[in-house]
Length: 93
Image 1 (cartoon, one colour):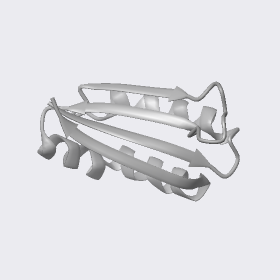
Image 2 (spheres, one colour):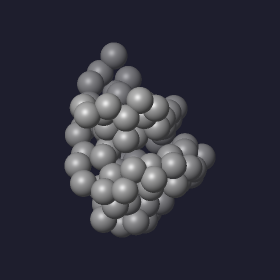
Image 3 (cartoon, helix red, strand yellow):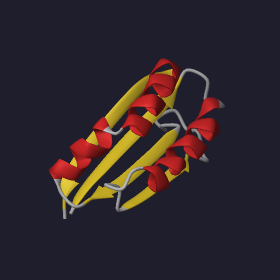
């Protein structure tokens, strides 16, 4: 299994809640997502990120299919301008 983790910082931290809802909708829209978790940071410390996304995929081909899926591309078009930073980690289990 391939795990895809994304940490996001928003220019306006209030946008994280809207992004969480939209990201969670991808779980039903994209068949290559085996599971999806999106969480908003609660403590908001100096080193915190605003939103955590974790998706699981069967393999790297499924991750690439998810990333190329029209629903993901549409969300990315909306999301990218709201972000001030993003970090990604992909690993297999």
